[in-house]
Length: 437
Ligand SMILES: O=C(O)C1=C[C@@H](OP(=O)(O)O)[C@@H](O)[C@H](O)C1
Ligand SMILES: C=C(OP(=O)(O)O)C(=O)O
Image (cartoon, rainbow, N blue to C red):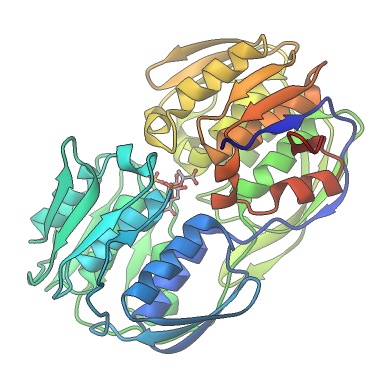
């Protein structure tokens, strides 16, 4: 049965909030700890369905993973050659990150395996990883159209390649680097637009001699990973919903604690500030090698802008909530160069355009973006299409509406942000499961 929320209208948001651990870092921490020598402890692990799916996959591959406490994992690494053949398909659930990175990590193993996912993941493009991995000598077959399930045929000796990514994608880059661990030679990945560098940073932290700078990573094969403790910072993409909510709702003053501010993730901060937002960083420090800070957000009136294409890759998961900020800004916001949004958990340009139109917002879709005209937001019913970020974005839009908004098909919020409703309510957001409202 579909789970729905009733949200809004809202009043000012106040207080201090800590959002859960970063999803990208949590996936990678499990993966590298699993194939390292020794025992690694992960703190701040995201207890989301996506990252739990990754942990469950490695348990099927013979890795011991204990969960002594919420957000803690003790991973008994089996070493670079120690994974065991699974006896059943490996279920990546809703997680594109899990499937694409696992394709890279598993294609150089001695055994065969199958990667499967849910209905949404089963529609997402996998050729972007299959094609370069095949050039490395991997053997992977997909269903018709290059979508999951993926059959990975083991037993091939991989060879390194020098590859320039066609789409800006940290998942493609990471898949190639993970394959490169077991390849002969030096794997080089070049990116026309730099993307998040968590794989590179974490490989270095686990002792692999990788060299990297924005736009390029070079990784020699034939080394080993040393177990390391990982502290996961709070996920900027989860904080983003509250940054925009506090900006939009008059009278708000909200503090978000210890938010990860990797420069390849914070495009939304630049764009919101250019639109007039009041976001101040306090207590800048480091958490697990990543920059973090507390963000103090005050209500401010926004004006529409042309989103610089140079920021698109650095805010790729923040477009659903940016569309809401744009809908409540004065004037028009123009988004271009964001065609990747069409192949996420849903077609995020289409689902956001349909939802905003439902709330009376004027929006014109283009193949790679949209023009969003700011104006009043009305009530209505929104189909989130099972997309976690679309559901949370409309929960924020509802705060500005004059009537209640019903948001359908929201169960997938647990993939990236377990406990969203309780945390949102604690700072004054009006959102509740339908039936409990
Ligand atoms: O590498 C990662 O952890 C991610 C990369 C991005 O995907 P793409 O690589 O497809 O852009 C992003 O949308 C996803 O949420 C997480
Ligand atoms: C696109 C996302 O994740 P993934 O690709 O891992 O499914 C997301 O979390 O917005």
